[in-house]
Image 1 (cartoon, rainbow, N blue to C red):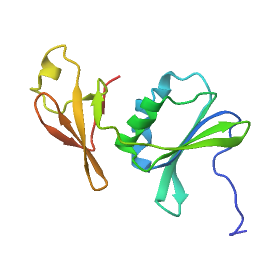
Image 2: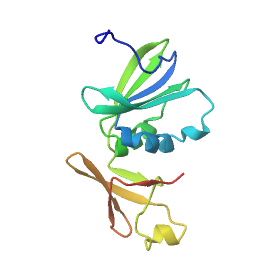
Image 3: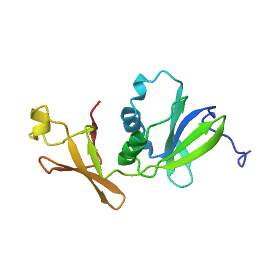
Image 4: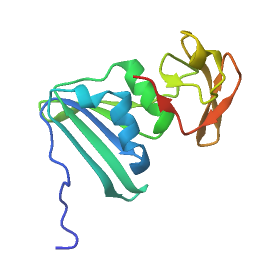
Length: 153
């Protein structure tokens, strides 16, 4: 029985599957996609076994297909995530997330004295890559924030 294959999370008929999420990023992606407002069935699992990652998380969203900008936002917190489009229980498209060069109106600046935190100014960041790490540099105050991004809803 030890070699028996089984799925830990049930298949979906149509929708989006986001796989290879670092377990620590699961709830960040739930925030990014605003899944708390979703009315379709959502299945997620965390700390699942992964040969490549040790442990991982997965999200399955029935009858919803993520927009390209949503997929690229996922890359900020899960740059190795894979997005699969499912139709009639089959993977019809496999997408790699791509880290965007710039991010606007999505993340809060970590600098409490930044104009974006004091005035009604939309946030804007340049995305920097340092090996596997992602950092955001504020267009206004130039503060660089690593990994711990506060999502603006």
